[in-house]
Image 1 (tube, rainbow, N blue to C red):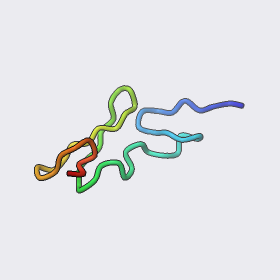
Image 2 (cartoon, one colour):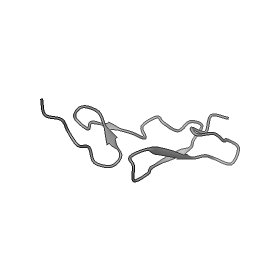
Image 3 (cartoon, helix red, strand yellow):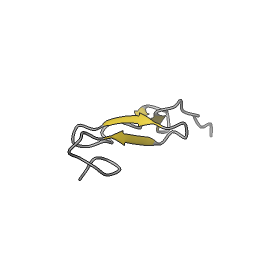
Length: 53
């Protein structure tokens, strides 16, 4: 069965999902590492991996 190799920032069986969609909370912005991992940049009042705290 063929598999897709997704471009940076995409995932899913057909590369149809953006990795960052809904990942960061409380107004944080999301960027991708070269390893295709999401990283959040939180607003000043929030902290944590996904800006939860």
